[in-house]
Length: 255
Image (cartoon, rainbow, N blue to C red; front, side, top):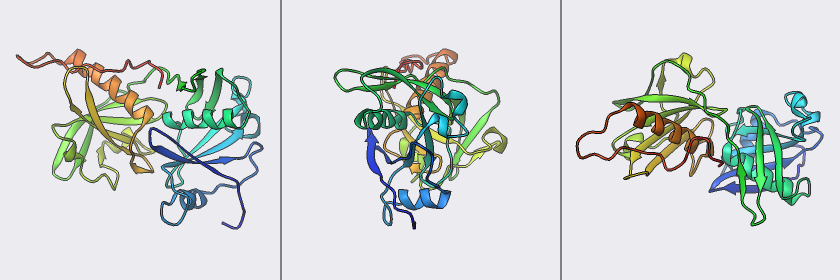
């Protein structure tokens, strides 16, 4: 890149981001530039990039400016644009606090998935209201190698396909996006979660984040898994001697 820019680095439960403050939306962040910044060997390194812009200064967020002063112009690590990132909103909020733009308490952050209510507690904890999940109709299938699974289509402001598997190793290396069908279900790609039982009120997951690869955590993915688990539990009678799978996180809890 020929332009010098100021940046910070942050993470939410090891889901890490390059943070680029740009209140007046003056920096041209092309997909190639974002991918270069997020490159872990030749750049700064990150699962994604948080472009910090005043809502009034960004054409995609001006209509949300009355509700949220700041817009999280989120980019995936490969430079593509995304609607929303759960951990990203918390890191974004922490940056706003550090920069003196917000204080403890409640405020909103504009995203392409709508305005997300944020709360910074006195003890420093940052939470975000993820909102109600949407469950698009239609069957979805996810494939890795010679194995395929039905997947639950869950939208948390961004798209997810949640597949319940017998072993997390069946997800493979997750270097490449797991194939899914039908293609029309996710025209802009999808985040794919592979989920296994770990006992009463406990599941474990691996996730391939769209545009980033496998990440160490995913806020919207965790909520999508909670929603999918609750739906599967409600629709599947328990087998004799088998404990029902029950989510340990309510779908509308704050992340």
